[in-house]
Amino acid sequence: MQKIRIQKIIASSGFCSRRKAEEIISQNRVKCNGRLVKLGDKADFSDHITIDGEAINLKKSKKFQYKYIILNKPRGYITTMSDERNRRCVADLVEGVGARVYPVGRLDLNSEGLILLTNDGYFANKIMHPSSHITKTYRVTVRPSVDEEKLAALAQGIYIEGKKTMPAVVRVISEEENRVVVEMKIKEGRKRQIRKMFDQIGLEVARLRRTAIGPIKLGMLKPGSWRELNPEEIRSIKNEIGV
View 1 (cartoon, rainbow, N blue to C red):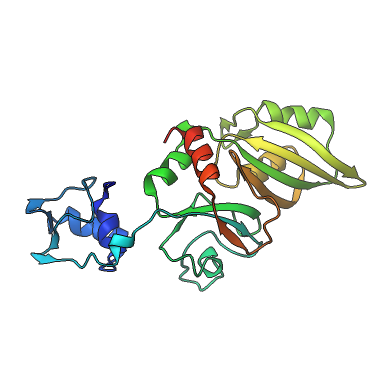
View 2 (view 1 turned 180 degrees about the vertical axis):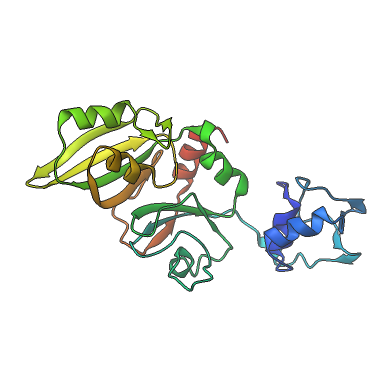
């Protein structure tokens, strides 16, 4: 049986959230088979896990499964599972998943497109870690127009807050008066990076949509809809990030 981090087992049992489970483990209140647990320790559902000497109910957690979800986030939603200001968030769009999943990275309020959600923390951290350099593809509508000099600047890297962005792949998809649609591929994920890059060359981003993360493509998924990744998609993205 596959071993997973003990805080995940506690969370999936319904005892508390994973973050709270990590706090309890740090307080030396959790034991596995009589041995004190440290953060990072793993177990499976046949192990005897106690909190403050009381065994947790693992009946629910025996059905624990990793979930890998693709969501087409519409504009106007924030990429969190809850919000203290009661704004619309992606949690409202993934009801019925059957597991407590979390977004992998972010899209800002006015951006849209592909978001991955999962309950596999190791997978999420590998994708988000800067060393993974996984390619993210965006379709960007900008105003007023783009010339070769600006395209070259984007491709070579733009200084944002004193640090140059990594080289990007940029191509024009369509062009009309005062409006250009560009496809852009980057291997970073700085906060509002693409908007800031275009702002630095004097262009306004009218629309920003992420269409792919590595080999995972948004395809024809409708805004606000989600689906589970199929086994081949899971294998392909895990291979790309070395999981």
